[in-house]
Image 1 (spheres, rainbow, N blue to C red):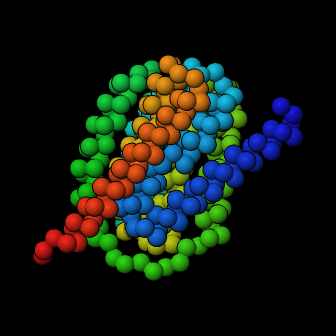
Image 2 (tube, rainbow, N blue to C red):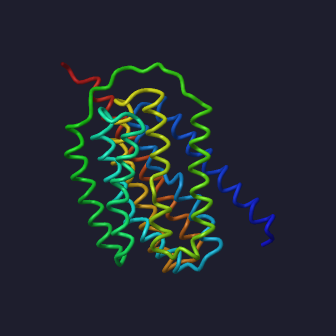
Image 3 (cartoon, helix red, strand yellow):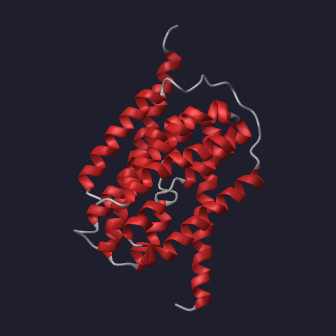
Length: 270
């Protein structure tokens, strides 16, 4: 590929990822934190990133990267829990910084160990259950919001998310599957979405979205697991489509269950 073609492809990656991140952030504010947190778990960064990797790299290399991304999802749960804990008192930037620090504390050691898929899946389930159990005691009651979305700032944050995806996918052959998988699993989408919600609508809705996001990350883990396994048994593009189907199917199921639970709570007599 020519240098010109490489840069065109890079900007396509940045634009597509940024658009999806911006759309999900806007949806989270409009649909409420429970649904928004689930939607934020869509593979808005993983899917574009792995699309280009599946196209350009060896399937076994991409499979190892997907396994590394699964371990990164464990660190994402630590990121979200730290955000839930800190958002009422640390402010938008402080809560985001503390959450990112929590992610690195877990992600760096995980990037250095063997990425056994079953062990990663079991650890992810255990961490998800624990953070959901403890996190529910930390979220605050939700008050109505009516503040407008700051589109200029949101677009800048979305572009930043796209640049991360573009850089990691371009440099992945030099980084190796473990480190590249961990970086591609960095919760840049959640960073943008939660920071935007906190700045535009307050810490309560941001914290509740982060709590719902603990469940939403399950779809990211499913994407990583299915892609890692499927790449070893079927052709790359069917494997990629299977991973997408698993992720979007789980998100749709969780969104429907969340909506039904919310409706049931409204109808329950006081």
